[in-house]
Image (cartoon, rainbow, N blue to C red; front, side, top):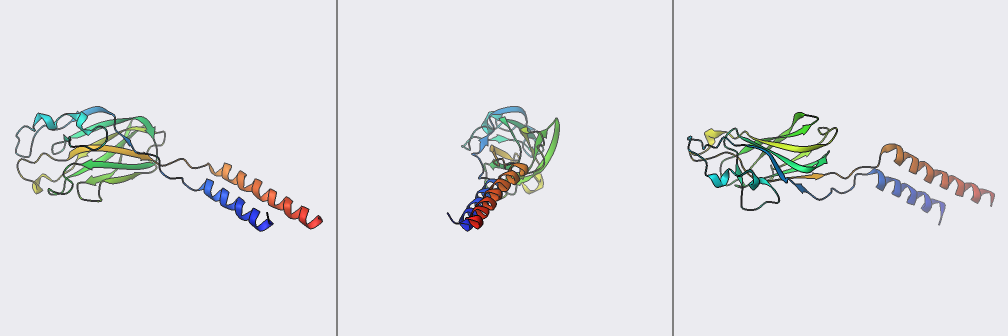
Length: 198
């Protein structure tokens, strides 16, 4: 292999190891920590019992959902720690109704940290977790922030179908990448030296 090809191969390998890898598979919430729906529609009527089962928000999206009620919330556990990644919140109405919104929080070292807001508007149901879960998070809280004034009297706020977290794959630490690149460059230097003296 020529020196230039050897150098190019070494640099390509180092770059591929230093770059972020493709995201892992999504992990869906698998347990309800607390389900705190208001239990009421906009006009104060009771939300149907079938909509108040927190387990409806677990696992992959399906036809069941949990109604938060205006100002209600639910806290979900994922059974695994996650750091940086992508949160996807599935709201059952998918923009059919006026905007329904919810704030998303992650629990890190006993402190709830806000990640951002999602809505039922197409394309507005994903958030990126970055710099929040410093020691790893395992719970998310979804808090309804819908504007009740936009909705009919029988509306019941954000209807949560499912929540997933897709962790970003870990990057190789910078010192290891630098060491790998250094070894590759030493090899190239050795090859050049042998060629010059050969």
